[in-house]
Image 1 (tube, helix red, strand yellow):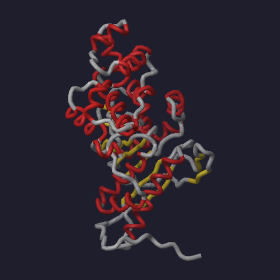
Image 2 (cartoon, helix red, strand yellow):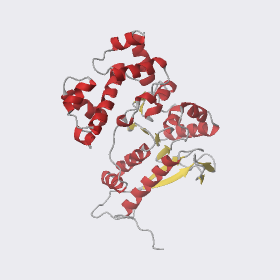
Image 3 (cartoon, one colour):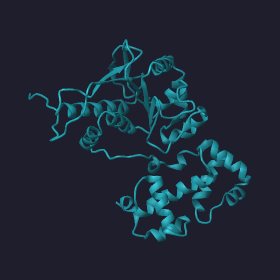
Image 4 (tube, one colour):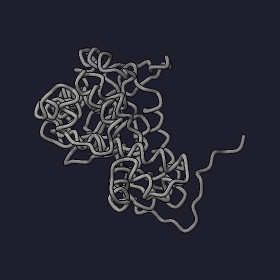
Length: 334
């Protein structure tokens, strides 16, 4: 068998002085895709770095508070003992639990509480703490995200906000860095998280790693959000979402509240508690959802689509699409 060789990238020299020591602190029932995405992305970066220099960019270990973990798909995985000195970075891969009830049960497990204690200890010692998808609940459960900005899987945002009201949740974003912490959104955002770490060492290495993985730059989860999956935890908010979809043109909070038999203040309070935003912001997202669908499904002009979703001119819709999706009209049509 031919020896394995790192992929070569012509004329790229990466300024890698020393390894970044990364511990992937993995729990029983870990989400397989999350863990493997982190490992594969960082390994690809290492191989690319070694193509122009003998230095590795990252020293990655899968660690755990037990000797062996079983992933959600049943793969038995030996893990390294905890390092004697704190790593530069500790990342918690996602848990396999995907519903609020399953997550609530997982957070009560002794192993998770041991992980939370370790995260606090390493964070106080200066380690960068990261998590993606459902693992953001673990870091928040440790109390480390209080009064800090963070993101999580978009469909779990209502549950996250209810459970951790002191966290400044920005669930529309895929990556939210803050001092000492980095959080990422839904499942495949593990790749975004790994690339963010690579970018800290070398922007050119991060770009080439993304190219090898054919992974596009993304900043927002907005275009993936399905609002109907977020509203079912509150009957009034669920009714509001259904009513708003039918009344995008001429929308007002007063009309919506009257139709639903509630006061505007009550409606605004319920929407803010569940979704963390105003009714008008929700309607803007529904308008974006409808507009993106129309752009991709037909040949209507932007002016025609703007009128269909409740805007008097295309400029307003164009600006909103760019802000909410991070993409222009031509990109969305493609």
